[in-house]
Length: 177
Image (cartoon, rainbow, N blue to C red; front, top):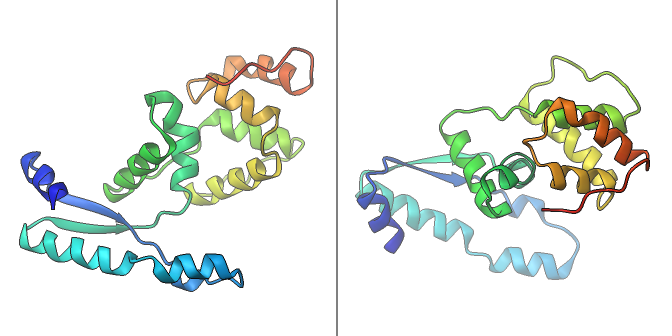
């Protein structure tokens, strides 16, 4: 496999793999079930793991929950990555043991959308991302998403006044970068 040549040439010691559980997510949708049944995920993972053993490379299974969402809102605009590249970045960070914190500005969006309800402080990483995902799902394709794309994760707390004005319609919404 060409990927393993690259891995060996760059002296990589560990490979992270998404721990997908597609079979358990069967739906009543015929088209979806056909796609899942024809998907050779288990065989591909088996081949990767067996080749990794031969090449003496560790393989780490990682929970992919919210990886695309986190990558999109936290890393894509900051590093100029596609959503897929940013998701891979999140998976690699999880494999190394990093926990993704929700940026303060995104927590402020949750508070804004939930009409000032204070966030539950003890919530950890993925729970906060899940709450943010639920909020963003409710306001999909709205001004909030446009503001996030326009300002990116580099937006500071000083920009909140501008964001507040955009959300209340006082100034026009900026365009996506």
